[in-house]
Image 1 (cartoon, rainbow, N blue to C red):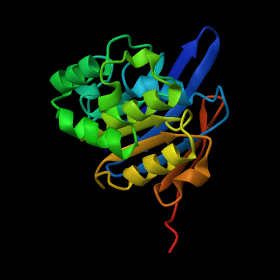
Image 2: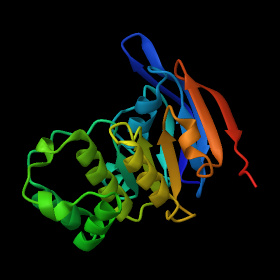
Image 3: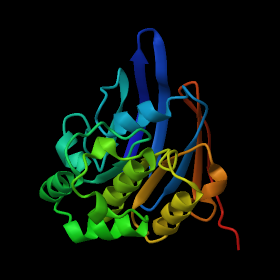
Length: 217
């Protein structure tokens, strides 16, 4: 088991954004997480990554509290946010930083970027924040996939991609290690056909559906 969530509660003011959620995510689970805006999906992800302290219950990632062991936990997770952060350094400096902090080889990041049809060499000296939305997302995807992680969390990763970019991304996902666990936060379940074995639906801070998805023969 990679993630164990027991009766998790997270409140903002008087509102329980996470309302007594209990979930287990096992090694190799490929999960589509769906729900309307405000359902608690992003809050749950941030709690798993140690960004939020719970108001009740607990979360363990690989047996550790993600708040008190955040550095160790984040080494196990590759994350693609829905909105790229406003990073002002160049792609070259950003790649160097990623390589130093994660141990990923520069060539691997560039290879994943090329597979997403992003020409890193042509943009190597550009500040990240000046890239187009699609180029930013392709670069973040390349960083995430270049790392060999126990858990991948993708929060609407294709929101800024054109149809070809989405096609390339989903093609690359087929190369992930079977033992790695993946959470896809998405509104497009049809894109994940053949890539998931489980569907979790959140609404008003609660898990309203958690079912296995059988692969089509």
